[in-house]
Image (cartoon, rainbow, N blue to C red; front, top):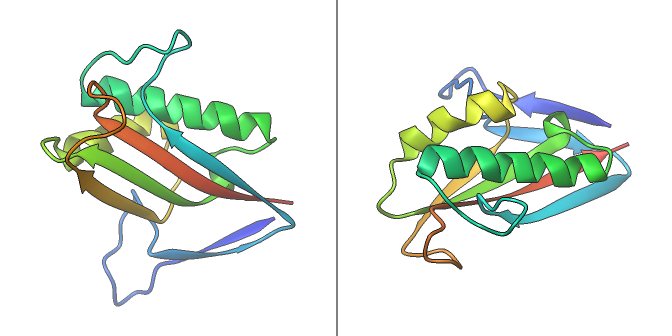
Length: 127
């Protein structure tokens, strides 16, 4: 599997995301939306806590497929509209590391559960 990051010199450069990727491989993994849900199904904490747990959940699903964040070629982050995007970004490094991924952030009025502040889905490409 190969992921080639596309970050044209004439565009904004970011350590947090890539402008695009070329992904090659024979299998894809589609990770459904992950909230900051713990093993009991509870969602607790502020945006930082929930974002970190949602990313841990996403990494757990990827690991089940034999993948990691290095295999992710696309991620969508849904945030409740009253949340601070920068606070959400700041929460990612501790769990996700500095693996740049093309992302889309969508501000929504409400997620599936009223206490949920963030939901993250991803696509990964495997060998």
